[in-house]
Length: 139
Picture 1: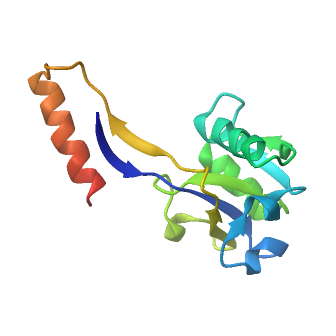
Picture 2: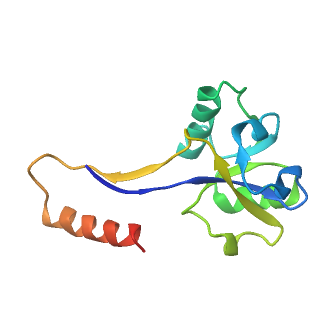
């Protein structure tokens, strides 16, 4: 297995949300917030629910479910909702003007990006993929 990078998650809120004034948020800060989330089986949502459970906090109050990132960000920009995005999926510059991204302070919310292959064998295609992924991880 080759570990490439840690893909962090960040909270997104509009600039009128009470959390928008914070530098970072804890899972406790997120308890009781109304959420916009991805569909039930998306990895980010699974991670979110896992971390709430690990930190013994009630599951988030999901009031809106979106099936794509632009819809999720649009909802957050127009409503007092909280959502979570993968830090490599969106840059702060590409967010709607009134949406802010905040780091989450939790040891449980990490997204390791790794490459796994069969022991003793890596095809030429896999070797090329490995080189591309390593270059992207260090960019």
